[in-house]
Image (cartoon, rainbow, N blue to C red; front, side, top):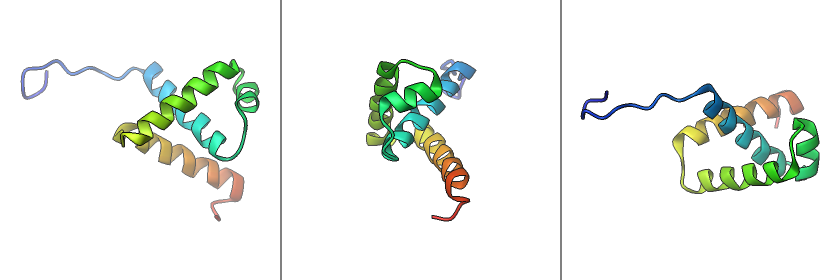
Length: 87
């Protein structure tokens, strides 16, 4: 219960995984990978990837802090792995 008497909702591991998945898909799309390529890599259907990219785009457009923190963290990790941190 928070300070105003409301119940706090715990984030689930599943929810965290979904947010990371959406961030990864959006970053890959921004790096010019197509939905089918991303889907093959993640062993998912391409329509799931398209939905994830749309959801990520929406969360970015409303400046969702939780999503942006994950997005920036995943993006940094990808850049470090792809370019050795030099970009």
